[in-house]
Image (tube, rainbow, N blue to C red; front, side):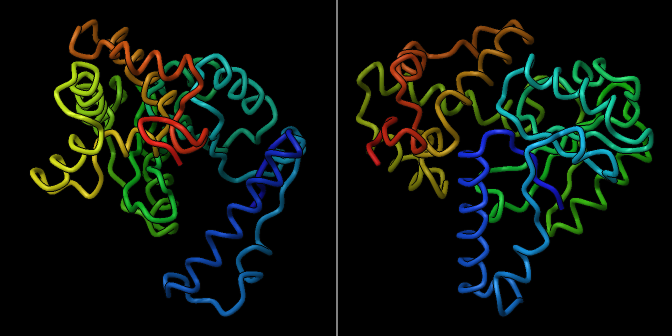
Length: 255
């Protein structure tokens, strides 16, 4: 497998995270290998997209949740990849049909929405664009299952399934915090105990990234034209302040 990252610092950070994840999985008995090198040796890290995908069999794009950036990547992939290669996006909210429009192979463009943390979470939303073919869907489903994931096909509608349901919940929790209904810990504790959720909505928002939550809500609000998806001003303020959750060490909680 080839992992493409043009920034050297990010490339080294990604390799370190994967190594930690593999080591943790072996220690917990989740991965049936004796030496992490058995897994890590299958991954090569490169910085050149063009050369990396020339002989690709399947490509998964996983850049940040920015539509213009993803469109530019798909244009490059379309030119560089063999004609029969499937182009998948790990987007959580951006239209697969729009991404496919940047290519000359819309039948081979699909979404693969993994959930955080990816090594732990089982489901993958396979997002079918307006022109995604059945063969592309089956190829993607097979790959997901080979990864040990449970694949669920969904249609290319704003937010797909999980984020269309989850983000209004997170957003309402932020409104409750903003309105002084209760503090963050109380809101999360009540949702965990009262709804049997493994993690409270504000804790989950910090894990996902407040900037990502805001981006998804903005897409939902724009594309569905429904005020119930209007991002809470407190969420917008947190993102503007650079308080993005765990990745910045400060969100609704300090880390």
